[in-house]
Length: 275
Image (cartoon, rainbow, N blue to C red):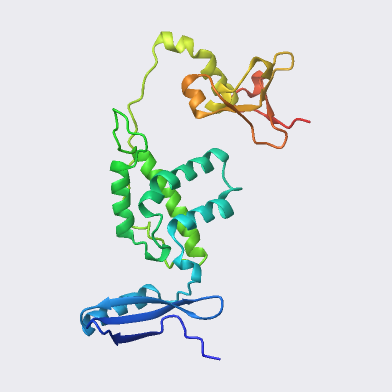
């Protein structure tokens, strides 16, 4: 049986086209065969320098054969195998949309091991200018800064997992620059608007409910006799904008929970488990 070549082991040769080629071992397949990374240069001196940098980059690395997986394939696997039961459904949907609409069209066919920080920086700059799927009159094809930040944070988390699984040596998102949060000016409500929204804000402040949960409330959820408010559903984002539309059942053991509306705990609601 051939001796297993250690990671970092390399060789140099001159090709028939006159260029110099070097390769090093960066990992091993399941059957023990080595995984190589190749470097090309015009001269032997130039190759030696490039090969030295490559050896330093992959020092102590022992990648698996999945390191040749495409980024799009890895993101699908990361979502379906590692994240599906760890994040909320709405977050999962937003991740899938970003992968489909922004990442795969630009980087989906790039091998994981070939991704570089410079390439990701170029991607962020491009997707910022051209990443909006449905252009509008106000923004055109430009993505919001918060959306670019969201794409970056998701990629960072996914590629961190790839590092832990020995698919890549380091996370190429480290060192990139992303837009700062650009918050729109705050709108101050006038007296008429405050009167109109009084019940909404009062409920929010005294129960701790989130916006989607408040918009999903119905009169049947209010138990005036016992001073309880049943939290049973969420309104989707589109419904929040239009104040009508679809609803989602809460993801909890019993499908809903109750909040005490008594004066003693209006600011710190007591969550009661239902039968």
